[in-house]
Length: 148
Image (cartoon, rainbow, N blue to C red; front, side, top):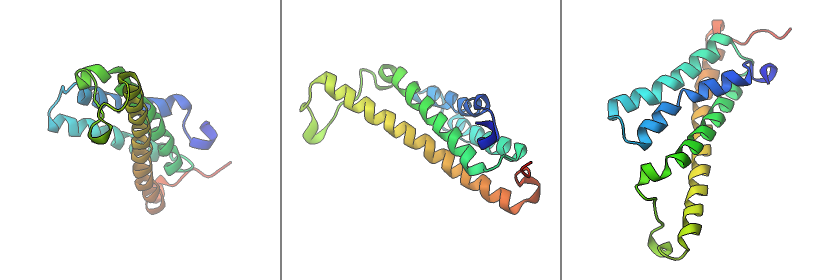
């Protein structure tokens, strides 16, 4: 994995873990907007800084992997904090209200929440990766190391 991403798997997951405090703080409503903004933007700035500093082969691919790992952590954390976050759990509304048994409704909502978390993580990784990739093309000092 290191040859492909330029970072070991432990570094990819370590960078993804930097986003976990924001997920917990958000789900449990522990912080206000200013601290939340710091918890959002500082980790992704660190992601980009590490990838640029390490001069990985492809910043976009590396940060897409970090984003995917973050998405997994985001989804798992939302599942673990489900009851605390929603105070009894969310429910389907509109035409679907009461159409499913409570157990099936809970399963459907959890599956969609997990999928949404994965897509969010990948989207964040892609966005930060695109910016970092452009920086590697513009700033010579951040270009990937030549292959041996």
